[in-house]
Amino acid sequence: MGLLAQGSPLSWEETKRHADHVRRHGILQFLHIYHAVKDRHKDVLKWGDEVEYMLVSFDHENKKVQLVLSGEEVLETLQEKGERSNPNHPTLWRPEYGSYMIEGTPGQPYGGTMSEFNTVEDNMRKRRKEATSLLEENQALCTITSFPRLGCPGFTLPEYKPNPVEGGASKSLFFPDEAINKHPRFSTLTRNIRHRRGEKVVINVPIFKDKNTPSPFIEAFPEDEEAARASKPDHIYLDAMGFGMGNCCLQVTFQACSISEARYLYDQLATICPIVMALSAASPFYRGHVSDIDCRWGVISASVDDRTREERGLEPLKNNSYRISKSRYDSIDSYLSKCGEKYNDIDLTIDKEIYEQLRREGIDHLLAQHVAHLFIRDPLTLFEEKIHLDDANESDHFENIQSTNWQTMRFKPPPPNSDIGWRVEFRPMEVQLTDFENSAYVVFVVLLTRVILSYKLDFLIPLSKVDENMKVAQKRDAVLRGLFYFRKDICKGGNAVVDSCGKAQSSPELAQEEYTLMSIDTIINGKEGVFPGLIPILNSYLENMEVDVDTRCSILNYLKLIKKRASGELMTVARWMREFVANHPDYKQDSLITDEMNYSLMMKCNQIATELCECPELLGSSFRKVKYSGNKTDSSSN
Ligand code: GLU
Ligand code: MG
Image 1 (cartoon, protein in one colour):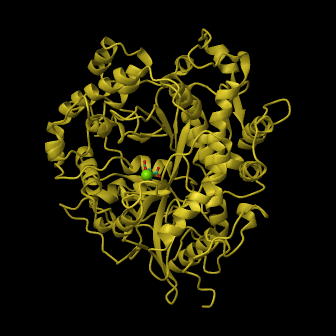
Image 2: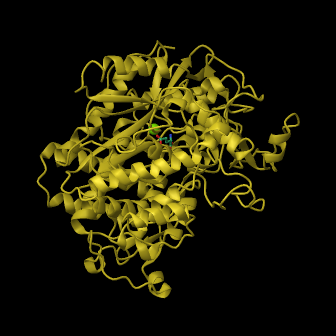
Image 3: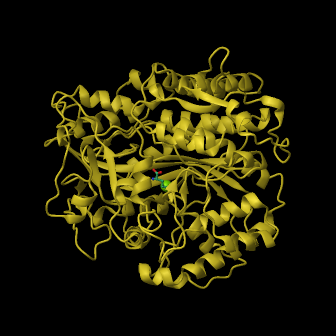
């Protein structure tokens, strides 16, 4: 989730006093980097994935599953035995928001050759094995996007009661502060978001109305005025950052060969975010309830929404400078490449002074407005020891603002004095149950970037349409039922070349003809006379590439999974989880997920992930490569 500084965190009031300082120096730091490396060229393709994990513990006797709050210790051992003892160790581990979470990446980035695609899954297996080996009997490492009973009584091990009093970080009625990672960054973020906003965060997730779900569905919170005011009928009410940032995802970062290629990829991939998010849907349950959404996105967005009432447009502007239309965690608001300029149709709030300063320093309009938009935000955490920095050689203040703009795509300048190039990060995907699926989604996205660059494809549509797609993508079964705006002719004119876009006409009628509503099946698999389909394009790219037999076979298997998820032949994780719950003998069609149902579901997920059982509805058959070994939670003897 970003950088970790050590030291003494400042309160919101103190941080706020330094906000202008952080912004001012953050921009100077950005300018140093920009001027030093703007002309860097010929960096090679490198890329890497990030998988976030949850630690769970099974109580087979009581048929209960809990989140284990041992992430910090497990992380310490993983780093000690891994990167700290061997710089070439194949895995890297990082903390995540929940005290029950860790994040794993490959030890070194992958390179540009095709055979690298064949190593992703092995590396993910290594990670799973490595972390699993440190767990206790009956514990498991799970790649689930959201824990179905997160925030229900006793959902952690050890158990803690939430503590909704002044002085706590979340003040949540449901999510105890002990479930937040112990590193001070995370509780400080939580507390400062709440203080900046002026009240607890409010998340209302629409409930799935089953046959016996009360209608209207109302949970009363008579003892808590804030909750009584904030919770909506027919919604599952959540009130803490942990409900969002305590979810897991799958991300991919690419190094581009130059800044302009990075900007081009940033734009092209931004249009793909809602499509791949819907395809990866894996989070239908919240706080023990079946919801009507399949993806975590909006939940996290609301969980870190630090905007004040003024900024949200609920009160006239008095103490704040802007109305701000989105949370810090949201979809991108402007394209960055020249080709994208004519599709920038969202009102962009920017810090005008910063924009002018960047322009004076020779930065073009699109990049200047991008940065000036990120910098409308305040820093959320600041460590006393890290206020005065060397702007020419450090970038903490820039990263402070940059890394708390959690958007669908992230444009990442190189760190100062490093040999890392310009990068973009693809952030919308939900994490899947198995290493096979996670590899499939990662390989699909990376291959897509290869094809975008080689065939000079152009996916751009007005950004407001991408935003509409983001909303559709999160709905239940969006992958089968949703219609998404997508560009009709993605090869048109070949004017989508990096660095030299064709002169764009910006007549709105013209723009309208460029895209139309399509199903995910059409976008991914194509439809005669309508759209060629991304998978057929990837397949034809593959046919023209030199690839060894084994790698080709793996890639084709990955693409098959994506293809079948898009057509509905295979289920998304979200759909599969819904069916599992619906068919559970204890389920009363009342949208409630009991401890025992959660236990069976998580057991099943873990068995699938560790290949103790098949799951053809989710994975198809004959996909898998090698057997996983070393599982400790099998209770099949029970
Ligand atoms: N866990 C967050 C998510 O599900 C992402 C945190 C991060 O940026 O690493 O999107
Ligand atoms: Mg992360």
